Amino acid sequence: EIVLTQSPDTLSLSPGERATLSCRASQSVSGNYLAWFQQKPGQAPRLLIYAASSRATGIPDRFSGSGSGTDFTLTINRLEPEDFAAYYCQQYGGSPPLTFGGGTKVEIK
Amino acid sequence: EVQLVESGGGLVKPGGSLTLSCAASGFTFTDAWMSWVRQAPGKGLEWVGRIRSKTDGGTIDYLAPVKGRFTISRDDSKNTVYLQMDSLKSEDTAVYYCTTGISRDGRDYWGQGTLVTVSS
Image (cartoon, rainbow over all chains, first blue to last red; front, side, top):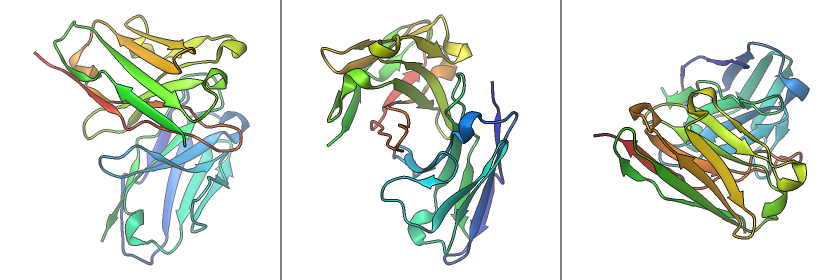
């Protein structure tokens, strides 16, 4: 089972700042099939990034993903008020279970 | 428009059973690999299991703590996937989502979730 460790647990930033979220895998993620989701309270997760660096349909270009192997990063440039939420990474290309990271909460400073 | 609508959640006693349904529309259900993901109150997301399409073998994978207690099935004639949960424990309390998973072109769809509470 691939364990995904996200850091930090919480990121306190102001609107307009840049957020950098990390997701580290216990072993190499097959095919770099690593996704990032955003989740707001009471809502289902929303796919932001798939295959490590491809933006999902309708996602603003201030969201970008990078990385390969075991180290992945989600960057949010110029935080907008609607970006304050929880973010999860998930590996989905290898053998099950398709694990999620523990999440990073981006909160308003 | 793609829709996934879960139903069947509720309050159940420890050791009891519950079956969740997820009705799908707006895409070719027979080709889809369907997954269940849960989220305990105030906690993160946890993948529960997945059923492949019949053309891809229809095989099913489960998260280790639910294997032997949960059963995923599908009825392609009804465009519905099921999650039968037996021998429920308090730690199974969560919102349960059904999802299509992520396609090669980056599409994925989620239901609104249904709450399962296991408590005496």
